Length: 288
Image 1 (cartoon, rainbow, N blue to C red):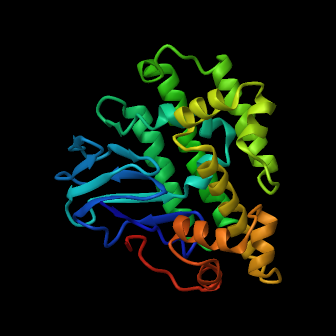
Image 2 (image 1 turned 60 degrees about the horizontal axis):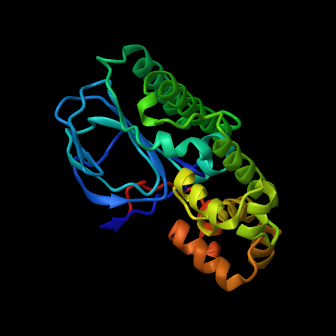
Image 3 (image 1 turned 60 degrees about the vertical axis):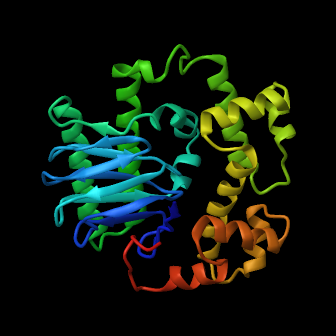
């Protein structure tokens, strides 16, 4: 199964497509998450092992590193909004809740007309901002993504508690993960270890490792690496800093490790990413 590398060449961390979207796309996965607003009848998707045949007005959700496929879709049959997993991982609330959000893939406009309308409106707002020349476009777009994530999270907590199971968002385990994510975010530029974070949360390294992966869907090293890559991306926009400066300021202990992990996360080297970031050219987000 192919890994797709999302090219965020226009706005860092977000991509949008309405015209020239694929009418089919083979099974693939990517580090990014995506929201799809269905515009026309005849769409068929596969997410994980489930087949979806959504109606116009429905919303589909694909979460980070989730295998999915566009089996068929009419020309310009949907709107696609993709965003970096860093947006999820940089928010303690969402990173902790992703275990539950990632079980949810479809909102029906017939069954949940109010919710689907709110999300559809947000997606159209996103499109208008994305295609505008306003100031702070990146920030405005990311606020909309967080608003959508918030709507989904509240909906699951109120209407789909079976996805959460017997565990409550206010339980002790939830607080462990919130504390851990917050600590990792604040200390990601330091040489921290899983044992350090477990100590801060007050639990054993073994138990921490188990529940951290269960909740965030990532191991501690992978989660920390993703945070550091996002920090490095922000630093790379400052061309007065060398690539080496960006690596060590982001928390990487060697440039070799930095280059390897950065390429795995973004599909290109830090140097190439810097060139792409400073370029005004835009390319399709559908480039494997």
